Length: 563
Image 1: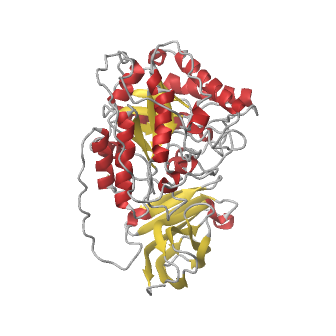
Image 2 (image 1 turned 90 degrees about the vertical axis):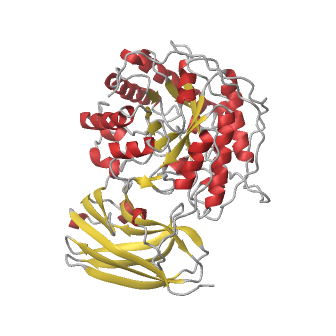
Image 3 (image 1 turned 180 degrees about the horizontal axis):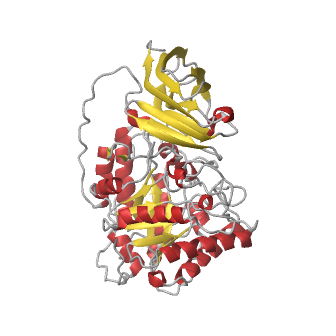
């Protein structure tokens, strides 16, 4: 573990940023409109719409490098960043002071993070990892963080630092639609005390770590109305107060924290002018050691899973948000990172590649560095279970463009033909929510879920297979092998993998200790959906807990051609 006592020294940046010629995003296609919607959780990517209409902010072309300073040095040294999403930030309940233990790390379907995973990330051109962490579910009523949880966070941080990479840790789902930390006067003083206690303990644990470790005050903070657009002025003021409190707390904690580069977010981590206009950079006892962060998933219809039919993009929203971040901060000598961005796979590989190239190319021209949001599912670049690249061309395009290089996409490897829509075992997942508890084991041809605490609803624990397309008028046969440690009836359904999670077909199976085989046929009567998930709901089973259910040999086969 690297714990040098010397912080970054400001070195002169000689690079000159030139104006750029914008390339088109999707030639000949109508621009995707930016929706006026309010997002919902639980997934972080669902929280990041920043969905205001494009800004009219006028900017001049990039004309000079940022002033030499430690914060700018950090940004300059990033090649490309990656998020270890839906891991240490996962949670299954919202009760303060109830310690969930280490099982929360896998509650949202990903396996435990390992050194081998971070090695894989490093070996593929990434030199900075953002490690989102949720804290409230690992504390007691006196705001004391569980020692075992703090040890685990440090272990993951060391995976990154030991690889000579930059690492960012934060306060993550303590904010957001279900969070306790709010841009609101409601319980503000109590929330400030808890927020301070968290950063005092984090700062104490990592005081001796060198400049490769950075702290980010909080993630996507919202007001009481969970508004993602046009926040009230008081909400923006409270964001400024909390950012100042974060900086003051870390600076007073001793060790290398007195000079550590710190990262501050805007309201909802928004990048539009309605949000940035009221942002005030905290006063700092150290010059030039603050970085501003925003999360920009634009154009939102294209990037988000809620709109499976939106497979093409236009550049207007990207230009609007990024030019605003440049004019509001970079041009004034304040370094910027895009802490989260990404787009889900909708069977539109070429469009995703052209979007990624334009997005990162534009950031590079503005001196802004990017961190891809990898949630291990729809936004994943790496298979965490198989420890391999899952999106080779997309990753190659991101890394090459970030370096100012060209990338030639590779031809897709030919796969053995199969009529089974569930042949990719890496698309199995698990979700645990609302105080239920379960541990998932991924098998070579399915999954096994050990349920240790029941929930009030069946969907509080879900085993699922994602990434299905159901075509209107087509008939499908579903079959699988199944067993359980006790006799129990469990429902399953095919549903939208996005709000409002509408159900297309459903059934149930009577699980017993001996392995049985299930099969049924259904017809898709609704409009074609390219983002369907098959869900086994295991949560409402109090009389049977603890128990283990297993599903293997899943097959979904289309039995006709549809309309």
